[in-house]
Structures are given as C-alpha cells and as structure tokens.
Image (cartoon, rainbow, N blue to C red):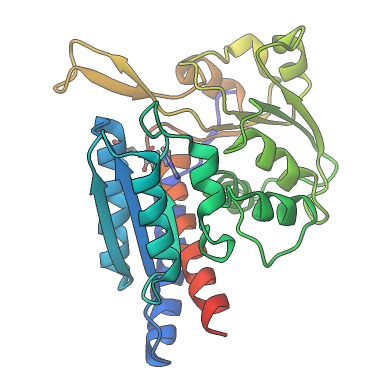
Length: 293
Ligand SMILES: Nc1nc(=O)c2c([nH]1)NC[C@@H]1CN(c3ccc(C(=O)N[C@@H](CCC(=O)O)C(=O)O)cc3)C=[N+]21
C-alpha cells in the first residue's frame, strides 16, 4: 500500500485564508478592522520566525497587526501590564502571548490575565471550559482546530473511527481529543502519552493517529495500521550539517517509512504548521465579530 495521499496543509491553509480575507473585507465595510496583538518576550529564534509569520499573514489579509517585542528581562508585572493595556484597547480583538516565555515568567498567570473574549489561542480556562461544553462562542486552540480542518479536507470519516492522540498537552493533545469526541465528529478517542504502557500497540489500533509529543520521528512504521490517516503535529528542529542553516524541520512521525503504509499523511513542514496560523486568523475574526456585535 504505497498509494498514500499527502495532505497539503499549505493549500488548505490558503483556502482558509481566502475565506478570512473575504470576511475581513465585509467586516471592514461595516467599519470594523479585526486587530491582533502578538507579544513576544525574549529572543527564541523559532518564536521570532512564527511571530513574524503571524504578523505578515495579518497584513496580507487586511487585518490590523501589532507586534510587541519585549526584552528577556521583562518582569511578570511588566508583562501583565502590557496584557491589561491590550485588554482595554478597542483596536485589538485578539491577544496572543508567544509560548514559551522566559523561565521567570508565570505563563499560567499571564494566560488568565488575558480577556477571555480576546484569547484567540483558546488557552484561558473559560475557553477550555467552553470547548469541553461544546459551546461555539469559545475559541478553539489553533493547532487542533487546524488539524480537524485537515481531516475534513482530506474527506476523512471521523464518525465511529478509532482515533489515537499521542500527547496530552493543554495546547494540542487535550483539546484535540475533545474535538475528535465532540458531537458531529463522533470518534472513539484514546489519549496516549509518555507513561502509556505499550504505545506502539495502542497506536496500531488507530484509524486516525494524531502525533503531538514533540519527539522527532518517534512514530515508526510498525506503529501504524495499514490504511491509517496520520496527522503529524510535531515541528522539531534537528541538526543537519547538509542544510544551509544547519538544521532541518522534522515531525513526530518517521515520515519516509510511515507514509507508504498510510491512506493519508501530513508532511512537515507544509502540514499542520500553516494551518495553525490560518486558524489564528479565523479566531481573530471571530473575536472581532463577537466584540462588536
Ligand atoms: N501562544 C502561542 N500560540 C501559538 O500558536 C504558538 C505558540 N504560542 N508558540 C509556538 C507554537 C508553534 N506555532 C507554529 C505556527 C506555525 C508554524 C508553521 O507555519 N510552520 C511551517 C514552517 C515554518 C518554518 O520554516 O519554521 C510549516 O510547518 O510548514 C509552526 C509552528 C505556533 N505556536
């Protein structure tokens, strides 16, 4: 079985962004320009790349974008003050504080300080609760939302399917499990993680595998049932002397050996990553609508 489909995240993201562009134009015609503030504390090079991409995408779609770059030494109080200012700013509908912040920052307190109506990451406890309650007024975290959209775009039947989510993070694994089991998706969901007893055996049961552990190429060919659909959420930088910047990106799935066994699989890069940004734009639009209704 080597007739697998590569799920093109760039192409699906482009069509989501086309929707956002059109809806943004409509909102602007009503006098509302959706605005996103992205706050970056410190100098993490990967974070700089992502924040730059978010800023560029906003501008390209006609959203208002404010990029706030703060030094590594920024204190908890200073960062809280920035968040509170953005909460009160009528030009800003969405607020994102890039993760991970420097070690001296208490990220949980920062997330709780964001106005839940502007929490376009969907990390605030109020939005986590709304996701669990299947209340559509909340914000769904961007990476799981994008992964669901990729499954839909590939025509994958989730209803009744065995889905295995590897990873239980609040950012991806847990919300992904909630989305897959929600009414309408109707998958049978197993959440596996580093303490799971026989990860390969659990994974082999899956019709749909969501790999979200952050370990490069952990999911091997013999973990995957023939004909399964694999969504690779991992974005790992691994050293590569032959690459021009000294590293390459790889997922949590050993793509070359796994792909030929799959019905469909997402590549890295060009899979879930671009969808994360596209869904962030969608969430910002939702925030602008809800705040100005
Ligand atoms: N508050 C917060 N919200 C986030 O949504 C958030 C965050 N913090 N911290 C970091 C992660 C990571 N993340 C990515 C977004 C896009 C790509 C992406 O577009 N990746 C491209 C490749 C980009 C490259 O070349 O490095 C791809 O996969 O094709 C990757 C990763 C958002 N995150």
